[in-house]
Amino acid sequence: MSENKSKHQQVIEALAVADGPMSANELWEHLRSNPSLNSIGIATVYRSLKKGVEDGELVPVELESGSVRYESSGLQHHHHFLCSTCSRAYDVEGCVKNLEKLLPQGFEMTRHEILLYGLCADCKMAG
Image (tube, rainbow, N blue to C red; front, top):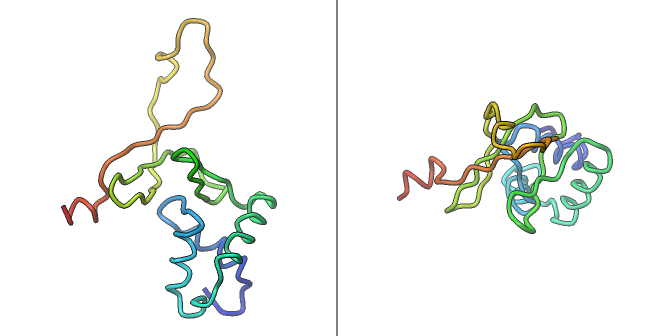
């Protein structure tokens, strides 16, 4: 990320290349590891996330009750994996087919979300 880009644009780009949705704090820590952004404030991250959602660049993702993460709005349909140890979220490509067969008779599904839980590769190796 070049230094001449706005901090807002760098926030948007960081989420565009992330492995999965990130919370404001996860994103802030990630951005601070970049030498050109090590002074970015958490308030700037929150403002950029709010503006990104308002502008349609980002979507909020609630994987756990009360825990909001953010990801790019232009992603294809996908699901998420949440590590039970480190709480990182990852995108999972693909989708389960024929979910309509699980519905009670007379019901209509308009959308769905699937959340997988377990250990990410790093936590599995550490355990």
